[in-house]
Length: 86
Image: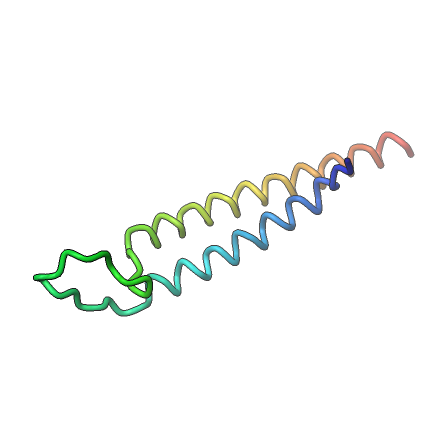
């Protein structure tokens, strides 16, 4: 099993966070579909829950912040290794 470098993991996490945030903002921006009051059927798939979309946006923000920490730590570690070897 190959373990990816920390820099690649941080970059991948940052890209996933950006993608998730983009999707969440699109979901929040969608206009709400009016629901018939007499119907007790499940909501159509197209109708997005705004609360869930906002929660997804916060999750993406937290993932982005964590990925930045991984990138910073990776950079510091590499800098320390280079300084030790010189």
